[in-house]
Length: 191
Image (cartoon, rainbow, N blue to C red; front, top):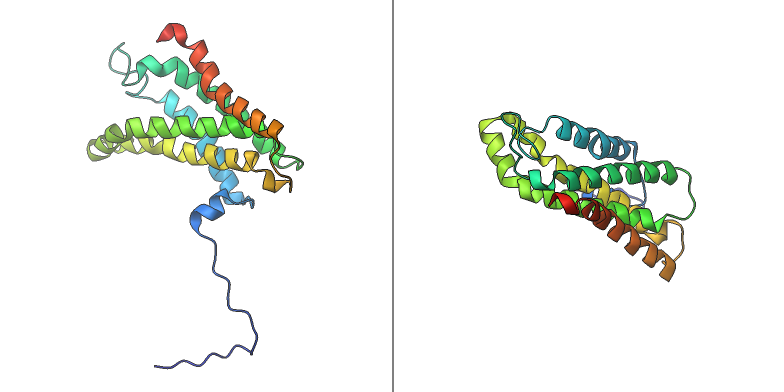
């Protein structure tokens, strides 16, 4: 059935909204994104470490958990990432040129969180089947989104209207290597 178009001639067609991932990584920061960042960037990782039943330590015995060998590294990089995220979130509201080193650090944390999430995925799925507590095993994926999104925003020079200089690129690389490398150096004697 034909439906007439009552828009005046020359009127603009309605704009399609941006896709989900474009909104997540775009320059516009929404209050919902900020709440998500605080929840999955600060609160949930700490709760997962505190109430960890099998990943880095076990509740039932004194044996190390599934990734117990990596416990010091994970705790160190997580502490570093929480500080970097806090610095970025407070800096982001101040405007000015985005700090590329923080962008590198946050992207490093996003990569780390994604790897942990993938390592825990089979156990998280199994935990969902037998115990509802397995849902907390998906926290690293949400944390990865928080760190990757904020790292992208911090490293993206288009927010300030400038192109990335070689100094910004070097600062970004330093931040990435620092975030992933310093905890590894600190944990050398625990491996």
